[in-house]
Image (cartoon, rainbow, N blue to C red; front, top):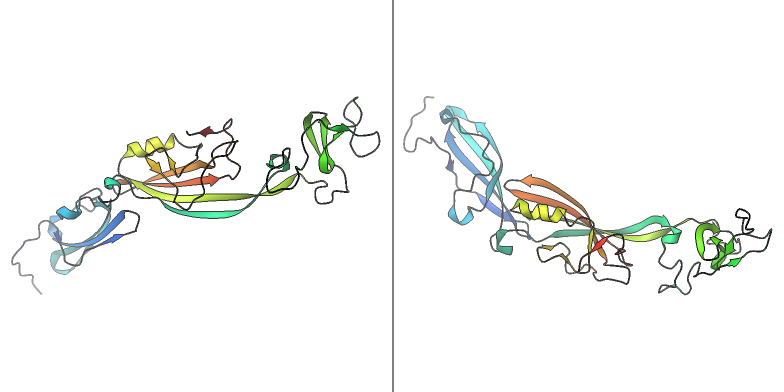
Length: 277
């Protein structure tokens, strides 16, 4: 069947009815649109970054596209758009979309917060504070150099010197739950989040905050990365939430940032990690 041309020559792509805009609930809007065009016009398939052709939705920029060549010299283009809703944070960033994973992980027993000093809700400290008492010869503690037996703390704990030094282990079999133990299972909470930015300067600033700890839901006023339900605060050791991972990929004209935050009930030591004020 021969083609009969009438009306618009479709030398440029024409938006078809039925396009739709979806929101993820956190400020990211996506749009799927279909266009018709004369195949002879050889439309560019690479339209990344092109604005959606409706003024109210021009903040949406093309992310990916495809083209299908139809009969009678016609072509159908399908383009996906992404953008940040202008009513959410002024369109500069989405709200953080977070999930949390809670579990246990093996840690050295000496890192337990109740190892030296009594820490609630535990009834007693595990090893207690020095000075420790030197064991009698041929009893429980091994000999250390020419000083004789090592020193004993609480619960069968054994140290090289009266004020501590090297921790040798738990040497008293009367304390069966601790005897020979070197590790314990510590509670661990990791938050995984996704947030989108419209400017690379946000991404660069967030990189600089990697390995910093905060006592609030936010890393400065610009980066509220934790939800309202996340536990926050600080202890005598440090702030409770540490930004532990930042990954970035380009998404249309936006920057998709996937990040992780690690929570510590005891706080992240301010001598080891930068604690934000």
